[in-house]
Length: 152
Image (cartoon, rainbow, N blue to C red; front, side):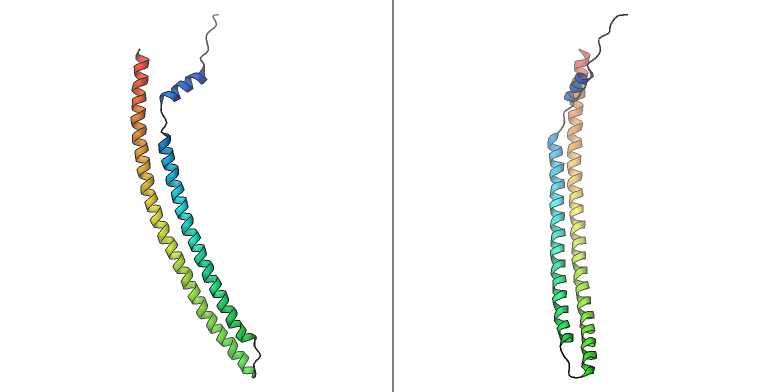
């Protein structure tokens, strides 16, 4: 039996991969688009957290201020009942205002998120279209080159 020469598969793969160019700029653009989206989404989330913290802090301060009226000594026993009723009424009003404020924050986050996702979708679509167009052109050129080399 005659010894046959084994093909160097690594070399063949390297030559084949070298014949088909990779567009790193398209990958960089896609990464940049993704990083920009992440930055904007983080900004929306941080602003919402800050605003929510302000609402919670205000609500707590107002609640504590109203509690001081309950903690003071009253002249008449009926005054304690009135103080509790006044506190409960004030607490219900403060709770309603706080919930409305939280709802406004949530609504703003939702609107900004939708706007960002729509814009990002457009950017990603444009990046993908450009990358596919360039890849098609490069692959066609590489295929022609490989066909020409193979024909010789």
